[in-house]
Image 1 (cartoon, rainbow, N blue to C red):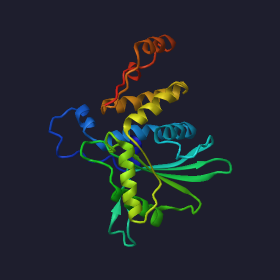
Image 2 (image 1 turned 180 degrees about the vertical axis):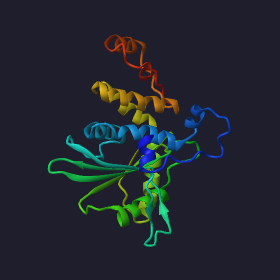
Image 3 (image 1 turned 60 degrees about the horizontal axis):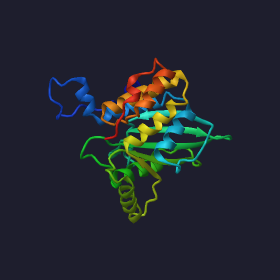
Image 4 (image 1 turned 30 degrees about the vertical axis):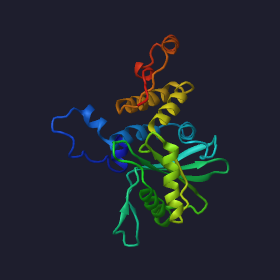
Length: 244
């Protein structure tokens, strides 16, 4: 959350939040706070760990690299859409990586959806993609991807096919990879099994943030017993996630 505040803005509390609501209720109703809590911690991981999580969550369309450095991360950057800057677009997160040896650049635009009724839509992807290529891209050899998380409904593949069809109809080739939040829960959970203690604490916090938003995964009781024997100090929150 601190990273989101220092590099951009942490969003605004909507009018639908009642006065006197607990911070827990505010968090559960805020797309911006969930994005900041999750991605604001992901960017503290080693580059290779972060890249592994993204590939596991969003798929093999992201190329497989072992040497990965996160060069920069910004939250809610404001990008111009025209020369005068009178129109702007605001992706949720913008990540820049150096990958491989020799290093090449990969830029990642993140568009996150969480609240009911706020779905991914092709026009927003088009505006962000166009603004990036016209005014933001600095390396002609860089690859770019748009990561859409959440807002895809229960049939994510069908939604993706429909949205990409709309983009192609407009003559735009956007490299979109997409997943709902439970896929990110799975990817983070898988990394906990192999992470060192300092990164494991970050990963556990990320899972707690997603669990608070309602994205949980329950592990079997025998797995719970085994995990507690192997690591008695591990947080119990890591062990009680369930899908929604």
